[in-house]
Length: 266
Length: 326
Picture 1 (cartoon, each protein chain N blue to C red):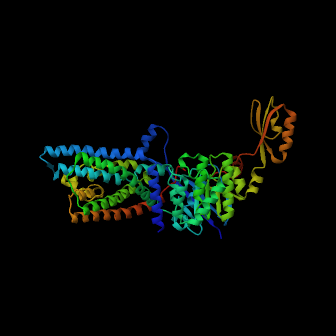
Picture 2 (tube, helix red, strand yellow):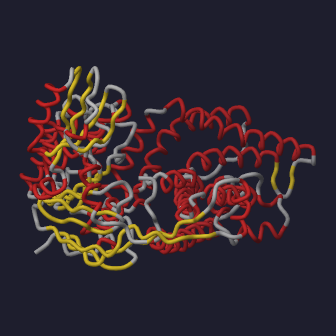
Picture 3 (cartoon, helix red, strand yellow):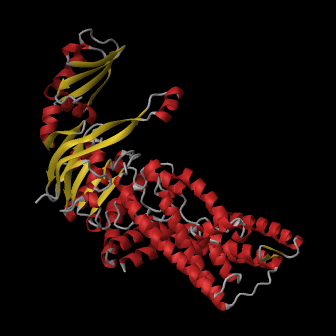
């Protein structure tokens, strides 16, 4: 009850704070929309030129893929390790460490609180994309509901990945360097750049063993009909498995991280 | 039974050693050197419930390191500490709910929102009943004069205003132990005075135990009957503030500006500096009026001022009898 209440209030503060930056949010989302629109136009053109499909994706499925992509991207933004560098180097984490609420909960609730503002901006922009590119995909109600559910769990999963990555700042005070490497890996292994079916088989196999796919392509496949009910259930299974595994890892790393914290900078 | 108890508490940092210059930077890529810095060396003290204790020392003496160990921010290298019967290094929620650490650069409120919104979060985290929360906010608004501040976004507040709302937020849960690290740092005199009064009043009302570091002697004099002085990681004085002042600050400084200084300035006291028309002399407290009178008689004085020695000087005198170990 205490934790739920703290989550609720922190999320509300996150929402209120985000509402102070409505225009900045719009510009950020525009950035997130431009990236997939470029991919969409390129791959739709190539698919059309190749006789209508590449690696099992029709031109129309590419359109649906990248429009769904926009919601996934807007939703799965988490705390980047750049923030951790500042927290550690300047000792800004000190106040949080003397508060009886784990910083993870505080960060997660705060980011969750942002989402309604971003999604509010996303709706008209996504509607515009649908109008312009007119995907012919018609997902069923369960696919839509499962998609939204998977987007939320995908957010939690990606948030944990970034959070545990950020904890390396306790050792290096430069977690951002590692973040650059992981971002590149994520770009290739999540389906963010292109659907993984366009990648070599070994990349696809590797992607199945890593968490990134379950934060991007996994949810998208559900809504564009590239997977069935069993595949959707398996996707949720992978998401929860990774959340549990990384949750344990986060707890272990956190315990070690704060032991070696030197509280410099303040 | 003590609220804070410290036994042979020690903290050693491992810090990289690197000479300046490009060559040294390149060498350090292949051969990194470290040295161990003992910031706090086997210190012992206890603090009883309701005490307000000043923790004094120059920069780098080990004050903040000690406070950080007592609040669980740092793990001790050896020795032990107990706060409210808890080991702070375990960072148990039950302990964190009962203490507060306020640093001069505290930044715990949401920058974009009015402080009142962040206070709500404190209420939720510390499970403060709504009626108590309302009365505490009302009381803090009055004591800290927050009326015009708590509904303005924190980013629009000045440093002093922000510090006031930060302190209000940090004390909403009525901590039993309060660690204050330079709480009046960078504030103007009026703001310092208000915060001092608030801390004193809050401690009196709630019975909170307070441990305070400050370079402002006025903070210490206004709040603390007892002081602990730390230097080079060791405690070199633990006792009444009045004794410290009598023992180590039994003098004042007189700065005199004259058309022509007398050649024998040392006849007034210990000359600290002399240049052209201005001289500063250290004079025993009991002799200050007599010496000032003599100066006015002996010289054509343009200006004269009598000042308390700065806290750093007082402590420096304490340190004279405590050379650092090598």
